[in-house]
Image 1 (cartoon, rainbow, N blue to C red):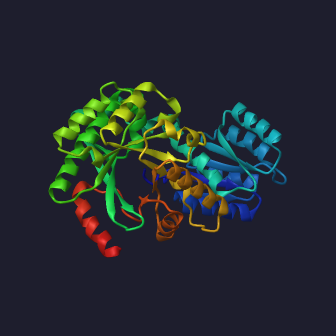
Image 2 (cartoon, rainbow, N blue to C red):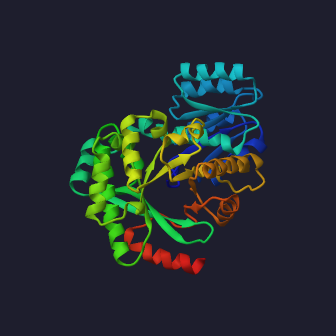
Image 3 (cartoon, rainbow, N blue to C red):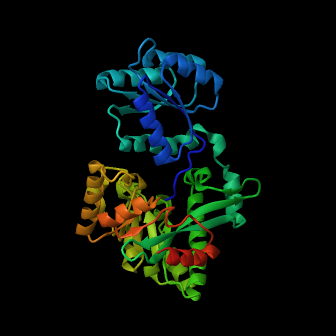
Length: 398
């Protein structure tokens, strides 16, 4: 997974506490790279900003403020015609919050969650995940049209970039994750958040998955012929795994590109674990039986996963990037990482830390016992031809 791009978000924070405003501002900037942030210490100040800036599309709102409170402000922003996301921040009783949530929906506001005070950095991940998942539904103009996706598949315009993965103990380069892009005639290189959701509404995602497999296996073969022996990880949609012939298609491609099965890793999401579809499990077990490795992506986003890991033939757990923070003194965070790594070791599963954004996180995940790492500190997603250059730079760096 890649670092999300939330540059399109324009945030307004409303709270009568300067301390809370500064804290939320810092978390949004440092953890999610959100740069367009306005602050207001009162409801009237917030209304002034909303009238002046039509770009505000994410509002964090405290309920218990003097004079005009947050409940009154909800009514005012509704009358203003505000269409962005609304997040409530409050330390009042959950009964009041539940009622206010219903009120926000009655006003027609796009309420997406509540942050209970005292707010913890980890609490934001749920909100950010909801924004990421709902962006396409709330901004249909952001998604490509079906005909554009079909054209890209037919014209072989599905491109693949690669993000390196390294062994955290030896710092050795061990593999890459294939990341899908689309070469659009008008928009240029388009990121997957513009077309994957739309493709998953039909079986177009199967064609994209196969296109990525073919392109990445072709690149792997060129690397192999030049003496580079690494693993290739490819994300596979649950929809593709539901195809009866999927495993056989992968076996055919492995033969075509003379690629050992053990060099291929199929990455699946937690959604696959949740469904327990027999066809998905059949494909995964057939692949794994032949030597293909299986990784569970974004582990840690759903609490139900931990007891169901044994349902899948997993080689790796990819620990979600929200697990890794800069503050080493955060005991709750360290406990979560420790638990995940301990569970993985008990099940004989290797761990991959995603979101290694700086040297401090690199040191943290290494000390905690993660096996492998991936993230912008190690290497950004890059074209296949740049892998050898990156490898030389990484060797010099380590």
